[in-house]
Picture (cartoon, one colour):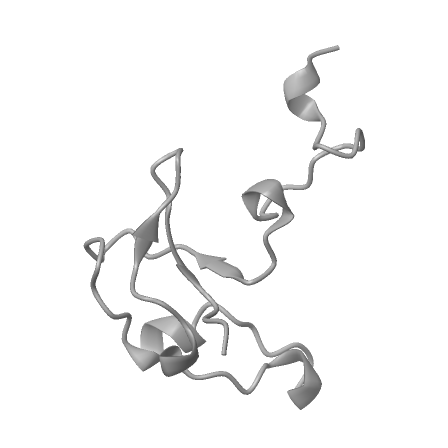
Length: 83
């Protein structure tokens, strides 16, 4: 069995999980250049409202996140700013 299929804790990796378990990153901004600020509509589209439950849709703003960055694999993301 390949070691690439396991995450750092030795368990199986999950599709769509952020690399390295970084939960304060939002991926999927390939149409933006590194350093750009993401639009509010594009940012909010990354969060799905599940069964009309407002608790599944975080009350976040694009101002709470960094400009677009690129990780080691070339995927573009924004990261939650620390206050």
